[in-house]
Length: 368
Image (cartoon, rainbow, N blue to C red; front, side, top):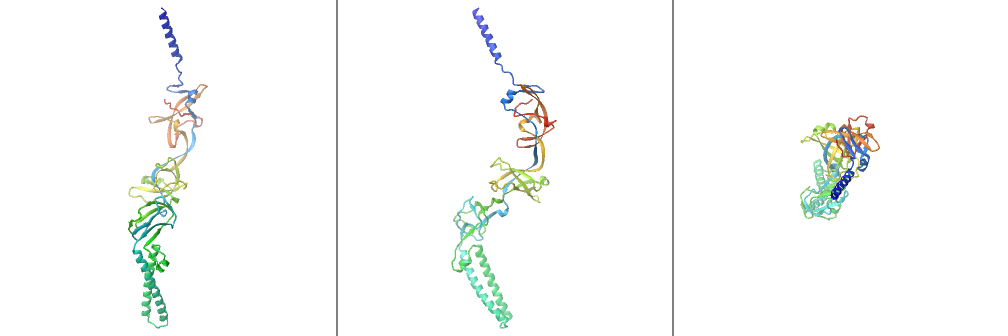
């Protein structure tokens, strides 16, 4: 009998302890209402928010690159072929307009300087002869034919001299140096613009063909966007429309620009070029960077809510609107809405009644 009493007592104690350990639910979910205790609301850092007015926009997507105008991009090349003697710069080097960038050698340069000296001598002689015969012709000492032959020889000598002098200028050789008898088979090449060296095509000892590029210089002081849109969107884009763009491979930051030019012709692949000027030129963009952009074609003030306040059930959207509040809990009801434009973590909402008096639940994971 004692064993039976002890067993019943143990079972009774066990049952009581389990009943006292049951946790009361902190929320109640019915078909029409969701009740959340204020304790749970606070512990899970939920929020009560109201819709607010915010500028929203819509537009069309465009891809493209960071680029510079043609006048801010240049190749360094030589009109004559030759062997590279010096090329002291590497990609990324900063350089100023007129600075030395490379030297090239070619025995033909000696012949050009020799030809210049000979043409100079011929020109000086022809000039003296022409002046003398011009005076004689005015004094009627020589015939018109003889004077004409003198004038012809003078002009030919002048043309030959001018041609060789121009060739020296192309080679960056000073005529005064050649006139002293100081010939050289090596000429220097200089930067046509200021900027950074973006690419080097040769190395010391390389032979380059005439007009072949040795290196490329890009000046990024006036970078712009070069975007591509489809033909069907051409009439939607206008000058001065805002552009929001990102460099997806380098940053998640959104940058701003404005449409500056829209091409007036459709390319063979049925696309159109759009150029945009950046609102801030102080960013360290590089020519050739890929751009993911949105050209803003429409802007308006709209009621918005953060995405954390909007719930989705299939293709339907709704919010949990506060119906009433007491000392212990919040009571929410399901209210359908329509979704409009989206920007960052905000969504345009439509279909609300008395939105200024509405409070909705945010930062929750509840659904009906």
